[in-house]
Image (tube, rainbow, N blue to C red; front, side):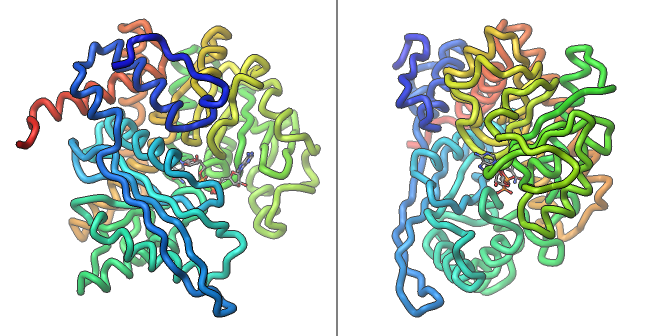
Length: 425
Ligand code: NAD
């Protein structure tokens, strides 16, 4: 098994599966993980690739490629989102599945890790095409998923509607309504109050914990957020309401900057009307790459992978980086940020609010009893505060950074469960 320190070539740097391996190997070595468990946890347990047909609106048949990867199910049913994007790859889905195993273990949920994806451009597809593609993809993975097996949720390019279609397709095959097969559903078909904004709420909780830990005052604390989708916009809104100054928002097609703070309610309204943040009159335009390296106390990458790399890490000015997205920082960039003593709240902790609320949704669906929003939010905050404490104490006592501490804690929990269960046959 690998024993040398992580050396990742530039080519490998932006491969999420390699990035996951680099951190996993480092943490496993620190834990003295035995060779068998190392091999087991380094590899996804099951991978499904399907090429399936969909009839497009013009009558043409198109063939799409979809994946579902289950990394590990030792601690419970696999849990993980489904991504619709043109650049989805099997390696990306593998990495996201492994991150789900570690994320669920860090926040101590009874779930394993999985992920799915379909190579497509959802923005260029009609509602009918998306529905037919979603239903056929569900039929392709139907033996893999189920409330006790593997429970999908939304991710980039998918939403509540996608989950409702998956739930309906699964239910039609089963012969009765099975709401707990997916989470992130609309409220009326078994969704949970608080789920939509849960990841953003979680991000705001770990920001608060970080400031407290580093003894930095929230007054005048400047925040820059990359991505103004589900995670970014909810983090921005909740944090502005809590008194942070959101000075920058970086989107795919350009960014906004206002040193006095951007009114996120106004920006949300503007985006709703214009389908873009560009041209918002109460902030100046600034290129997104520039915003990432601008002055602020907290930087929240909440868009996509590989945005903090060896190319820009040295220029980052934030004191704290809170990873709303999965895999925004490469392993090489980690080392550069560590030298600059940037405090990182790693993705598997920082964006766990979503899967925590998904867990609550799964529990509520199985009970047939639905909680008030205040209960969901309060329970989510308790779990995240405790998990933040677990990670920073682990980092202190093992003399490692927060990311490696989170991986070590997670790997240790999963390995412990596997040892207790033993190996079948
Ligand atoms: P989303 O599709 O709602 O939003 C993503 C936003 O980022 C979009 O507005 C998009 O235009 C923007 N974007 C994409 N590439 C960009 C770039 N290079 N620069 C700037 N902006 C860019 O997706 P989301 O659900 O908010 O997810 C964002 C990230 O958070 C992903 O990494 C996802 O895996 C992760 N995540 C999401 C959840 C959740 O509950 N939605 C939970 C955990 C983690």
